Image 1 (cartoon, rainbow, N blue to C red):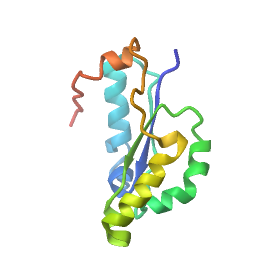
Image 2 (cartoon, helix red, strand yellow; image 1 turned 60 degrees about the vertical axis):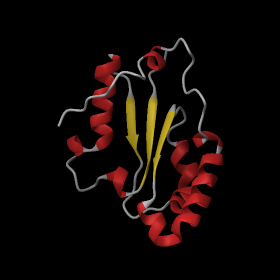
Image 3 (spheres, rainbow, N blue to C red; image 1 turned 30 degrees about the horizontal axis):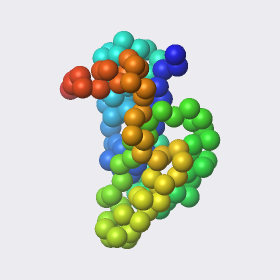
Image 4 (cartoon, one colour; image 1 turned 60 degrees about the horizontal axis):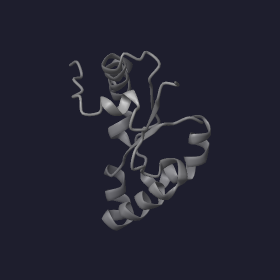
Length: 129
């Protein structure tokens, strides 16, 4: 069975460009998931950009997802720049548009009931400080 690939999409709250590489969220999440699930193949990718709003990502959606043909989970975290640029109504509009796209559409079940990852979802993740 192939290990999961998790894609993080978002603004500065995802990119965290001010942190050293080993301190960034994708590295810490990847380390924690690998440890909890005993799977060194789990990959967490960060596609966050400082200053980006949801409407900006929609323009680079296809290009970005072409680089990751086997994304299992997309974590979407926008809002900071959306609120400034287009308000709550604009944020809702662009977020709904993003979630309507096939590869980022929310799924009821990410993994099959017998999948080892699903069984562990209720286990708490403890990230090191």
